[in-house]
Image (cartoon, rainbow, N blue to C red):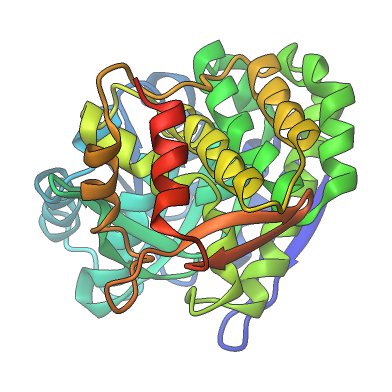
Length: 359
């Protein structure tokens, strides 16, 4: 088992990565302060791992919430299902919420924990690649609005993150690939040697080689923990974690949440960010082609949705959280392994990217 730490001024916490760690009550008990536990999961994960997870909390009052599965259910209405269960079962301020599932479950459980009785503890147990390497670490929580993704939320750090690689055995191939978009991101924004490792080992990851997956998740989490430790609330450098996301969130909003998986939209958005970076002279044509190639090898889309034009992209990106004082800021690549958040580009350069890559 691997153990990493997210070191923050007000709250530090561990990330455990390994095999069959959801079968170890002793590992989790130090991170549950009260006697009540509310496990939040969804209809897909519940039949697979809910009973096993409940066994971790034999000495506690354990209640469960089973949400519908899918990004389209990451709403205030579904969030209310968690609040209702907590109130019905009389959970108090010492309760611990447990997020058992992917990014949607983690984000919603975290936001419920941040806001229930003005803040209670929670634990992340991510079961997808995307949630293991990205959304479960760093304390971003929230829900979507029809006009923008993740526009309602809070920063609320978990007590710990338990990543059981075994849960990836039941992950559909499409979702495995979607998660790899976030893994590739870390190589591009801050770890060029890791990007090179991914180029050589992508087929092993797609084949679910356990050693390769553990290494990829560990390096990804270590990179994210390092960035989050410098900027917990995304006031500066943490924004680089959103490479491809401003374009990608526009795709998700336009297409309807869940019709494109988050990682699929981020993949197409990463190509757009790379194209603009190339136009600015920051990366080379060869760099750009390497980025497209690794995303294609990971079985991810590199093209925008048909019919989504440049004007639609700009309208949706105008409500992105990275817009500051009316200026659109994008995460772009100064070099392979070096990302920046910047508004230092001419609108005609962005227009050229949009014209080139939209249909």
